[in-house]
Image 1 (cartoon, rainbow, N blue to C red):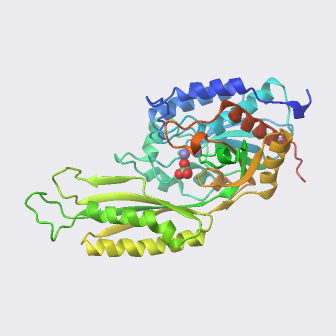
Image 2 (image 1 turned 180 degrees about the horizontal axis):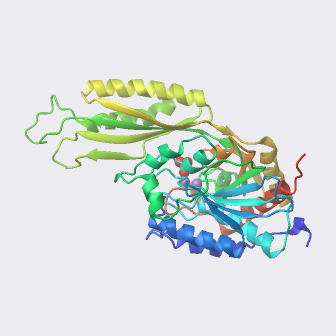
Length: 416
Ligand code: GLV
Ligand code: MN
Ligand code: MN
């Protein structure tokens, strides 16, 4: 068969995704595969088994990243890499992350059964803890691999129960021996659901993001004074939750106030002692700010920080702020983005040049290698929820685009 006529097996991709979705399945039809949980381990075990069936060279590094390498004709040439993540949000969907890993697996299966040889090796990857929901921040393992984050700092990060990342990685048996250290990569493609409404609204099947917004994460800790709610007069209270409430609305109003293109969100809060008849004396909450313009996001943060300090002072609630994580906006490789668009055209899938509002390991990969992403529509624009859904035909279409982008990159000689 002529290579240009090669297609993935959409039914097989569907059943692979369906099998993965049984691991950590939630009653509402989604998945809970928090990073380094037992469900994450189970999904990794299955993934590794599937990699071995393809006779790939499997490596697990000290961050728990799983790589499977398919040899090329010239294995001295840097490989083409593709993958995403297996972990999920607490009430996540059946496509976020896993589509990119299973999509790349489907590409390798297709090459394998058709005995397709490529010039360059091809490497599939599952990055540990993309979500950053259990252990903040997100995308840490690609960050360490790319040399942007420190391994030991990540090992020490704790979840809300005080469990350490490094210990949990060991516990699930995925603290590998290989150093988490970048090697040259010829091209990195990450296949993912859009997680927003635009492709569906525009009636397109393939999205080619020009890049990813910057992501800035902050952790806010407030101290109040606990007391019995009945006898304590309203005047003179130091209610940490009320201070947080004012701050949260300030975050919500920030994009309007600052103008320009940005979003700002508080998604997580812990209130202590969390009893209806005690004035709260400790609150922790998170802030997420995103924009294409890094400076704009920083200006917004400076403005917000001032507001936080004055709210805290007004309520007599000392504030501690941790600037947890920043990753700059990531403009992808123009040639690879164009390749995604051209490949979609060649396969007769309507496509759209767009922006990714969601974070991806592609942000860190973009710092060390030519990178692009392939998006497919999210039904109703819903993601990070159990009802997250994408049509099977679209999953197949995206995997075909991935297949042909990989084939082109993997056929490029050293001087290309
Ligand atoms: C990752 O899922 C993010 O966009 O926060
Ligand atoms: Mn994802
Ligand atoms: Mn996600």
